[in-house]
Amino acid sequence: MAKLRIAGIDLPWWSMLAPAMACGLLAVRGDSLNAWQLVAVSVALVVAVLVAVFHAEMVAHRVGEPMGTLVLALCVTVIEVSLIVSLMLSGGANTRVLARDAVFATVMIICNGVVGISVMIGALHHRIVSFSRDSISSALSVLAALTTLTLVLPKFTTTTTGPTYSVSQLIFAGGSSLLLYGVFIFVQTVRHREFFLHVEAGEAEEHAPTPGAGTALASLCLLIVSLVAVVGLAKKLAPSIERGVVAVGAPEAVVGVAIAALVLLPETLAALRAARLNRIQTSLNLALGSALATIGLTIPAVAVASVLLGIPLELGLSSVETVLLLLTLLMSTITLAIGRATVLQGAVHLVVFAAFLFLSFVP
Image 1: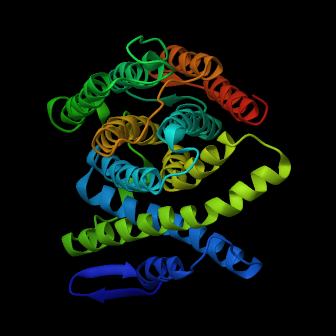
Image 2: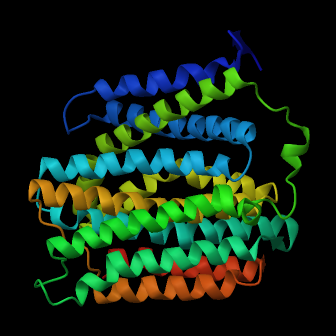
């Protein structure tokens, strides 16, 4: 495959050209896309996702695990947070519940959909997949605390009416989320880095040469550009998705699910590819790390925006959503606790994911 070798950068030409072309489509103005624009934006979104995965793997190969998976998770989450905050600032009827719906949809997609299909693909190819129990227990303990503090407790507090926090409660929840996520990153990358390394080496890493520093830096920059394109194009597709949802008579929450799924495409594809190569530890690092980053960064950001700008914010989940969240946490603890998984564990997660999708359309 033809590559460009300039100033120490050794990358395929398409991986450098595609992000710029995808960003070029962000110049398309207006909320209503015609048929050709809709096709062009959709194709560009898929291409941007694939290129983002390629560059994320280049960076991951250079810096090693678990830093490699952390790079993609943080990049996607930071841009996703920016998207949520910008939509909050623009106002609208769904502003109050936007952060809650986005965070909940992300957690359910990752912890049930991505984890389930990753385990399923890995087990179908390799019968039994192995991963570190210490890494899973660390991630799930933080995830349980974060989701309960930010998405469940607001429904039961009495200082304010409705599923909301008071200003002081919101500041405490945002600060606690950021603190817990910071401690998790310290444990993952410094204190107990060995917990998050591969139980079994993936076959791809044994043969692929490590990219040079210039190539890795170029890939990091192109990764960020690709993710900007992914989020921007997803935002452009949002009105079309919303009209489609209204046309079929589905609830408005489905729009949040669709947008979250689009934004998470790069992480999902990277996780599935790692699972196929029997690197399930990488898949779980990426999946659970993304769920933690979504809460640990989104909630503090929207808390600051809410307090400083006086934007009303509802964080508490409905009863059905709370049950689904608690089921997900309990099931994840049981199915992943032994450090080994088969197609059965994957199937259980996928069934709960199907229940989440079904109840999103038929609440």
